[in-house]
Each structure stands twice: as C-alpha cells, then as structure tokens.
Image (tube, rainbow, N blue to C red):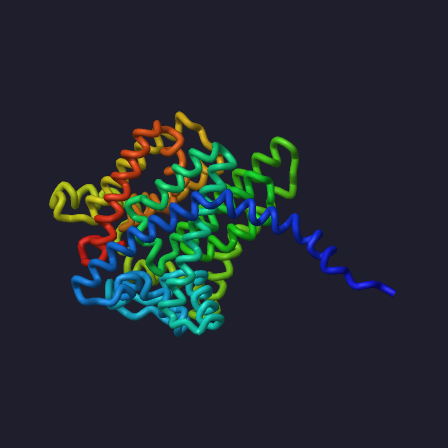
Length: 383
C-alpha cells in the first residue's frame, strides 16, 4: 500500500524549483525596474496630454493599429477586402493573429473589456520582453551591459508603443527568449517560441533566420541533428495563419493583398528613399520622415559598432533580417519602430560605449521617446 507523500517531502521536492525561480526573479529585478520606469514616464506624459485635452487616457492607448487588433479580438477576421485603395480598402486581414488571440483569452479569463484586456496583455508582454532582453544579453556579456542594453531598448525613441495595444512587446519577448534558447542549445524550445513570434507580425518572421543560422552552425561543428528542430518549427506560426486565411477567405495571400490595398501601396524597396525625399522637401515639418531618417543614421552607426563588438551570429542574423524587411517595404523604411524590433542593435550600442557616453545616449533617447509619444497623440507621428 502506498503512503501519500508528506507535506515535508513535497516541500523538499518543490524547494529547489522555487529557489531557482526566486533567484531568476531577483536577478531580473534591474530589467523589471527599467521597464516600470519607462512605462511610468510614458503613461505620465500621456496622462498630462489626456488631462489637457479632456480625453480618457485609454483613448491614446488604443488608437492607430491598436484599433485593428482589438477589433479582431472582438469580432474575428473579415472575409474579404473592400474595393478601392487606401483608407477605403483598409481591413483587419492586414494584421497577424497572436495578439488578438491573447486579448480574447484575457477577456474571457478576466472579464475585462477588450481594450482593457489588450492593455493587460501588452503590459505583461512588455515586462517579459524586458526580462528576455536582459537575460539574452547577460548570457553573452555581463550584468552591467545587460542592464544598459535593456535601458536603451525600453527608453528607445519608439518605445512608447510598448504601452499601446501593439505587437512590439510580444515580438521582443519571443525573439529574445528564442535567441536565449538558441544560445543554450535548447533547440525544440527555441523553435516553439519562434513559431509563436512568427504569428505576431511579418517582421517577426525574421526570427526564422537566426534559427537556421544556429542550426547550420551546430550541424557543422558537432553534427547535432536536433538543432534543425528550431528552423523547422519556427515558421509554423505564419504558415498556420496563411492556411487559416486560405480557408477563411479563399486566398492564402489575403494578408499581403490587404496590406497592399490599404497601407503598403507603392513600389517595393522605396520606403527609405521616400523618407529621405520628404525630409529634403519639408525638413523638420515632416516628423514621420525625419524620425525615419534619424533612425536610418542610427542604424548605420550601430552596424559600424557591430563590426567592433562581433556579437553572436544569431543576433546579427536577426537584426539584419529585420533591417531587410524595413528596406524592402514601400512605406515603412528604417523607422524607430523597426529599430525597436531589431533590439539586438541596442545591445551592441550598450557594449560599445563608456558609462558617461551611455548616460548621454540613454538621456537623449528618453527625450526622443517623450517627443514621439506626445506626437503620437496627434497626426504628427504615425506610430
């Protein structure tokens, strides 16, 4: 006859796991503190704007793309793309499913409204992103560089969107944990997390590239066939979405067609040049194009620093793929939001500068974040 395990035995078994979890949480405290500080800064600014304009704070947190994600969570996907181009043709088929799915789950579990559920999901995703970035960098450098890199990411000019119902928090969280898993040779885990990332957003599909690079490197060095699980599993998210679209709308290309009709019109690969042209034409009066031009210069500087530091090849593969997505777009270009998604670039910047220069850099970056956050409440900056 078996005797039930005593409470003391259970405690002894569980204690090592609890101790490990507590140790990870304590070590992650700098990342969570940085994230909290950045959100207080952003929400404080938006609260002031909301008070001055007699609007609810939530009005500014659920605008722009947030509207589409919340609509998908509430009603599901449309079945067809409206006729025409531009605003008349905009439809929620142009957005990926993971964030709306999580919003709907949060709504069901908490009974929060859909906008509030969206805010809850994105806040938690942002906190996980901060922890993921910190540990990803810590595995390669040290505590100081990890903390600096996290500060540069979460006080980067476009980081205000981490308080909107946007996918950036999810993308950064999933991509950073994928690269952490790749670094630790947890191949299946990396592939599963990457598959979730590819269901977030088309740019997040860049995570497939480091999975393939890591698998090839492991195969060449040690003939580790298990490494191929990462790139095999990684595209599952986007593949599943496209199959769903095929069944739902009759075309697996509905996302692409919706984007082209409603948002991404124009020749592919012209977004960077269009931003430069607009700045030459309008100067500082066109904040969108000015922000993209400054982001392009920052990207070039960080790529130069990249050659000095030589971070892991997976970081290079991911950041390069993200920049390529921006360069190929007819409208996005190298925007502040795109740089935020290519967050390993900030880690390299953190590892390249001295402490005084880092303080100057993070201060200027936080000021830029404040400007763009306030500008997002108008039509001056389209986040």
